[in-house]
Image 1: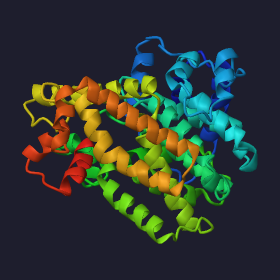
Image 2: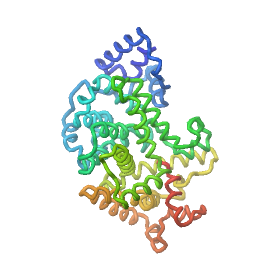
Image 3: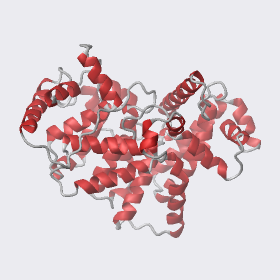
Image 4: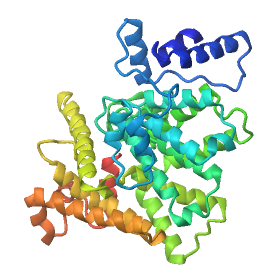
Amino acid sequence: MLILNGILHHGISMSSFSCVCLCSARAESAGSIPARRIRRLFSFQRHLLSSRLLRGAPHLNPLHILDEDYCGQAKCMLEKVGSWNFEIFLFDRLTNGNSLVFLTFHLLNQYGLIELFQLDMVKLRRFLVLVQEDYHNQNPYHNAVHAADVTQAMHCYLREPKLAQSLTSFDILLGLLAAATHDLDHPGVNQPFLIKTNHYLAALYRNTSVLENHHWRSAVGLLRETELFSHLPVEDSIERQLGSLILATDISRQNEYLSRFRTHLDENDLCLGHASHRHFVLQMALKCADICNPCRPWELSKQWSEKVTEEFFHQGDIEKKHKLEISPLCDSEANTIASVQIGFMTYVVEPLFAEWARFSDTRLSQTMLGHLGLNKASWSALEPEASGSSEEGESEPGRSLVELGVRGDHLALELKQKLQL
C-alpha cells in the first residue's frame, strides 16, 4: 500500500524522485511505525488524483521539478522575488503550474533555512509537492497560486527593517510555512456554507474557525507524513505555533487582532525582543499577506478581485440550486465585482493596512496604501451607483448589510464575518 501511495502521490513522470520515495516506503514498511505518527486521510484533492490514476487517466500537470535546476525565465523572476510588483500569474505559467513549490523552496534556500535546520532534501521536496497537490486547482481563488502569492507577500514583509532586524531563523521558517499552507485543502466555500449544510468539518471543529482549523490540521498531517521535522527537538512547538499563525487568518476574528494591534501601537509597547511579541507581529504579517491583493498594482489586483468574486458567486449558485439561503456577497444578481471589492477594501483592508503602516512606516507600506487608494478609485469608477453613495458613507455591500439589520459600529465586523475568506 505504501508503494502504491508513493506512485499515486507523485506520478510516473517523476522518475528519480519517485524511486527515492518508493525506496523509503519499502524501508518504512519493513520496520515498525512509531506510535505517535498519525497518518492523515487523503485530502479530497488527493483522492481525486488517486482515482484518476487508478482509472488510467493521465496526470494533466506532470511535475518536472526538483530533479532539474530552475529554468530560464522562472529563474530570472526569482531574482526579483522581493519586488511588490512580482507577477505571480506569469511565474505560475513559467513553472508549469508549480509556482508554490518553486517559490517556497527558493525562499527556504535563500534564507539558509535548509542548511541551518538540516532539512532532508527528499522529505522537503515531497512535503512541498504534497502541499501543492492538496490545494484545489478548480477553485478560482483559494488555490496553490493564491498560496504562492501569500508566501511571496510574506517574504516582502519579512524583509522590512523592523522584522529583518528582530526575527529569528525559526520565526522566518514558521512564517514561510504558515503562508504556504494557510489555505490548505480549501473547499472553495466559506464557513457559513459548511455550517448550514451540516458538513462534517463544521461538526468536527464545532463551528469555530472551521476552515482555519482544517488548514492547520492538514498541514500538520503532511509534516508528520513526510517526517520533515522529526529530527528536531522543537517539532511539537513548530506544529503549535504553525496553528497559531494559521488560525489568526480567520477573518471573523479580524476585529480582535486589529484592536490588540492598535492598542500595542498606541501604547508603544511592542518589544520584538520578546518571542510572544514577535509571534504576534508574524500573525499580523500573515493576515496582511492573506488579504493584500487590493494593495497590489491594478493589473494584478483586478485579476484577484475577479477570481475571488467568481468563487463567491459560484457558492451562491450552489445555494440557489439547492434552495438554501444565499450568503451575503454571493448573489451575482444583487452584487457586482466592484461593489464587493469596494466594501471589502473599506471595512476590512484599509483599517488593517493603516495600522500596519503605523507599525512599519516604510516605502513598501506607503506603496501598498497608494495602490489601495488607486484600486478603490478604479472600482468606484466602474460602479457609478456605489460612488454615488459616498454621501451616506457606505458602498453597496454596506447598504445591503444595513438592510439585514446591521447598524453603526457593527457594520464592519458583520462584513468580515460574512466574507470568511
